[in-house]
Each structure stands twice: as structure tokens, then as C-alpha cells.
Image (tube, rainbow, N blue to C red; front, side, top):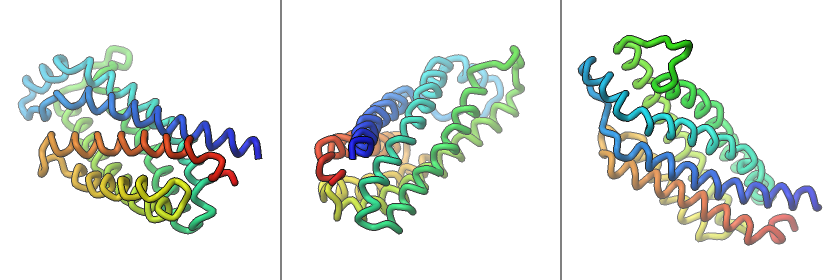
Length: 214
């Protein structure tokens, strides 16, 4: 009983920390304009926003690692309610982890020269397009995971408020997956909602540990 209790408590804490780190990462990306098409302007853009990109890269790395215990804790709590949906939802969350780590490596290539190797603008464009394409995929997977998990959360000890909040977040995640259509402001709203839901969910986990373990 005690190890499971500690695992869920740790998972609740990491949910909160992950939400905070994701939120701060979004703040670093928020003021950045879309990457320019011109080669010369693109190089200037990378130099101008190097600090924001590097900070966002580091924060994404640690926020993603915190998803590991968070996902395990959610699985432990929700599997007793609906095993199939819990496995599917947590499985989708788990898929995001290696994808995000790959995106960390890709984003880092824009700001951390390897052996001082400078890339030509065409390669930078490829790296940027892969990064944003990856973020698009992550947002869609996250939307699916959130909605599926909330179908279970509303029947669990975590309660209906967390589930209904999550349903909204899942829809916003899907909308935010298309930044070229909805604009920067809408994307930030979706990202803010996601981070807030993680924090709220972590607080619910910590507040309902005895019921969850029992």
C-alpha cells in the first residue's frame, strides 16, 4: 500500500511541475514571430531569438521527462475504473514522450552548434519545418489522449470538474494543432489551458490520494 501511495503522490507532484514547465516554455515561444522565408532574414531571426529557443528547448526536455511518473500515476488511479480506455489514453501520453525528446534534439540543433558546424539556411528551414510538423502531431495525439482519459476521469475519484476541464482542453489542443489557421493567440490559449489542466489534475491527484489508493 505504501509504495503505491508514494508513487501516486510523486505522480501528482510531477503533473504540477510538468504543467508549470510547459507553461513557461510556451511563454518563451509566445513572442516569437513565424520563421521568415528569406535566407538572410531567417539567419537574423535565429540569432535574435536564440535565447528564447534555447530556453524553450531545455524546458520542453524536463517537462517531457516529468510526464513519465505522471502517466504512471494516472494509470494506477484510472485503471480500476476502465482498463481499456486507461491503457489507450496513457499509451497515447507515453507516445508523446519519445516524440517530444526527438523534438528537443531538433530544436536544439537551431541554437546549439555541434562542433561549431554551421548549417546553411536550407537545412535550417528543414529543421524548423520538421519541428513544427512534430508539434502538430503531438498536439493531435495529446488531444486524443486528453479526451479519452477524461472519459475515465469523470467516473473516477479525480472527479467530474477535472474531466470537464479536460474535455475543453482536448478540443483546444486539437484547434491549436493548426497554428497557421488559427493564429498565435489561439495557440497560446490552447497551450495555457493544457498547462493549467495538468496543474489542476496534479492537485486533484494529491487531494484524493487516499481514495485513489483505496
